[in-house]
Length: 404
Image (cartoon, rainbow, N blue to C red; front, side, top):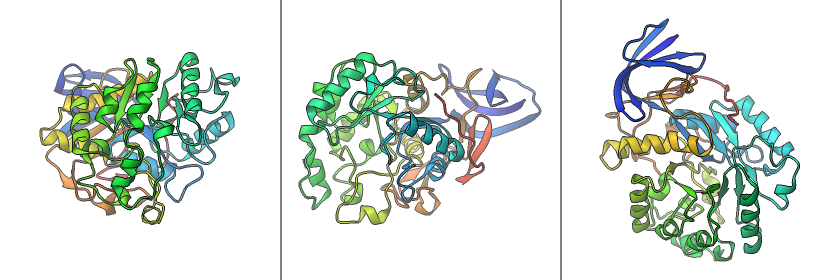
């Protein structure tokens, strides 16, 4: 048995000086004093690692933007040991064949554990595999379909599902494509798409709203639904991010939206933190028709740990949002430092805040809107008891497993 000793985050207790016993990838004991074959004492604090339930690793179809190897290395370096990949790859993950192909690819390349989302298309609920496919969730996009189809598909799946339905919460009738001269034009094109969508969605405990971006959208959330927010919708806005590089769906908004969403996040009204890691190359972002999306899985936890260090966020809220809440939402028993849990841990020096250095990040996109922002990266990252990243360097190849 390996033993990790240090000030650890224990749910319901906070930071406690303790020893964590680890055997065959699981936590076998959490006690004041433990003896083991290997005993490592850590300075700083030990936290459960993060679970990012919203990434786009672009594999298959767009390996020049990212693939399972580089995307998972981004995750590992940033303290994320499990992800769920969205289905809008090429081809879309929309049936058993494309699902199994993606799981096979991820199993061969990913450093972190994973799940895979399945796209909602016409007659999804009529498929023979609808009740048995081991997907993390269903994902419904408002692109390329009418609003009648969009809301009809949502109701149909919600009536029959036993998994979460994750929606991209923008109303198809209010997503316009007027030419962009500046970033605010993209925001204007989708000014009311989010609140109009959420006001029309049925209330269901299976409904999950991805990447909330507006205070008005928050106010119109269906009562029984859960939600997530991304660092870029908490920290970036049209005043501090002007470049079309920052074009993202849903768009960046105002300081007022930042503030309202952040308050709701602090209070747990938005329970989950996700990255919506959606990389494109800088050449693509600087083209005449820049695609939407930002890289984020590597910087998400470091940025928010810095928010904790500067007193703007409680550590308890961050740990819940990055570890406990996403696992619970997807029905997984993980995200806590307690007996029986996977030994997914990160070691943090809360005094080690440094500017984000683009040259040290791992994404193929090779850019970030958060360059030079202060951040606290983990010193060590353990996936099921194995060291997979240390001081930004990847220590393992592959080894990720499907969680579902």
